[in-house]
Amino acid sequence: MLLQIPQVLNPEMVARVRATIDAGEWVDGNATSGPQAALAKRNLQLSEASPARAQAADIVLAALEKTPLFMAAALPLKVFPPLFNRYEGGQNFANHVDNAVRRTRAGDMNIRTDLSATLFLAPPESYDGGELVIEDTYGGHVVKLPAGDMILYPSSSLHHVTPVTNGARVASFFWIQSMVREDARRTLLFELDVSIQRLAQKNGLDDPSIVSMTGVYHNLLRMWAEM
Image (cartoon, rainbow, N blue to C red):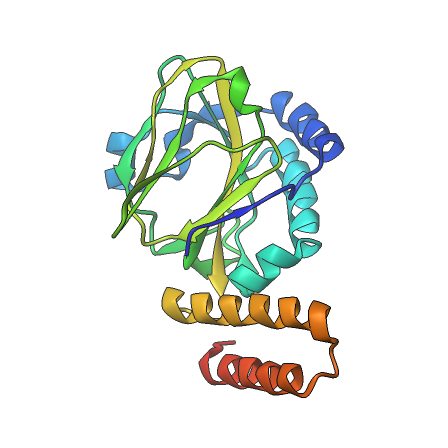
């Protein structure tokens, strides 16, 4: 499932995050790359050890907890502490697939990467290029979102970032280990959840069909969840 999640951060929150990270220590993006990714990746990254990274990550994590669409789609068990990158001067990231397992620099979290997320932090009109292109069975999906919006997609997807030829593309990126490992099952649960919410708005939560569908949702989640 490929899903755009609008306004994870409002403009004031985007400004707070940018003020924090823009003043931080930026290093070669390959500081967190595996051997194959290092051949394809050309960007800058906010140092994982930087206090600015921790402060900005806390803002993003707090916002995610208050974003119902993210919670419904990702069914998060663990969220990797958000990282931040910057592309400028022709920098890009060629085709790659994210590592299956990530470990924090401090070693306090191991995470299976079921879902990848990119949270855009620069207005799309402020830079040229920098599109995130995600491949699936239907071809390549080109993503370049307003500041504060986020794209959520399976970490198994082949994807790349096109060269930034003018301005700077700034974003947060991170991974999620879901309670439901398989993308197809997560998609079914999400679609069922969305349908329940729509019917509930129309018919009320006490409608017998809503009660029945909610039971089906939770029984499927109970069957498929890994804790």
